[in-house]
Image (cartoon, rainbow, N blue to C red; front, side, top):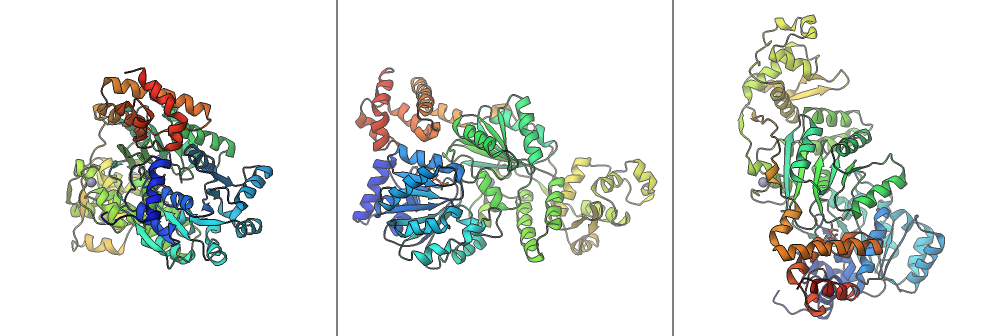
Length: 610
Ligand code: ADP
Ligand code: ZN
């Protein structure tokens, strides 16, 4: 920027560099900080890992009084507060996990204005006692994190969030900053409306996460495919595997452990203490795979998650993008991998159909699922498709499966007609398995019992494998050309749209079936290789020594390794080989407090190598 900075902007940059140890603001951070420092309301939409926290942390440091952070994630508050304490920021939290005495102590500090930031769960905030406390506390700002939780249509809906408009009513002069990584227009409108942010300035960042490679494969045997994927590309890496059901979460953890991969389960049906324990291990250790339902992960800011895998179809692109966004927050290469098949489509459609929701809600769920299916079936760049969904136009990325190995599309009209006429000839009373048996001319007992071997379509598709027919049928269901009747044994039905195809009036473009490829070992591209590639032998030794030092230090402080320093910072130290505190000061991620806490130790540790 060419315009000179004013005093507050100077101060913001100074805090960024000295407290957090970062040389410059990223994307829109500077403008957001400036706006909030000057008392404005803001709505911040930034992808996971984009750097939302600094947008309220720095204004809270500059403005008089205490910054209140509303967050639904009480399990993570301790880590957030620890991380801030590490850089010398006075932070605390108020939630149900702490003792009465401890809460009293925090409240006293708040009233005295002796804290910079306090994290509070929304249900706590809404209590009479807490609102009274706020009215006698000098307030710097309100940050409403995970603001999409106000959206009734979203999967993270929290009823208490809706009540947060009270903050505006009771404290009209305190600036509010709402933050989220969910960016579709509907959610955005709901946040503005429900939190009364009509006058807030909106800051919408690019949603692209260029370091994440998207990959959606045909599901054959999901478990085995996942194992191949992890073994080939992510051995020793931290990752998250999402499954739909609690049972499957448990099974997958067991299966991975049997195959030598340390995996822990996480779902809402587990004892809370066990859930916390597993989450803490995942955060603190280097190479744990978490198998989880979507109950896991909101707000998880472990920077070095190298892959996110989906074994079941997410319900929407928002959900998919939020979950995959937990990979690669440190900016190093990461994979988003998903296995998807006919059964997924059938199951998700059924869940909507059978839900208790009203028709309007079902329509919204259906539209969201259709968009997700569109992403799975696309013949074009996945990233272009995703960003387009969030209203952002882009070019083919070169870092997704469809860019790297473009799918072949073909005129599938004849294949589609074979499927449709078979469905018609079996009176729309049979499910996928039987329909495919008839098309392929398999003489099962059921085929014989119903004399379906007499049908004119019996065996007209013997040239294709069962998997191929399943893939074609899946696409037709995704396209709405075939419906599934869940109330009648999942039998397949024709739809309005399918008649035009049967009559040959519309053509159907389909994706050619690709047999599941075995993941190739030498393609391995984990963060460690990435790091190693950039360091010479001595630097690599220093880096390894530094990681050891970090493990010990984290243990001594009873905190997570990444809270001490990120890998990227250790890598930079190994390259810079600082001989003095002054040399070390320039390294990204080394702020004044960390320099003071660890500087001497690090310099003498490096000296051993020089
Ligand atoms: P979000 O909340 O948007 O998911 P975070 O606030 O947790 O993201 O930030 C993601 C990571 O990026 C963190 O490790 C943070 O320290 C780092 N980061 C944020 N802003 C900057 C910056 N200006 N320069 C360097 N690193 C940054
Ligand atoms: Zn692409």
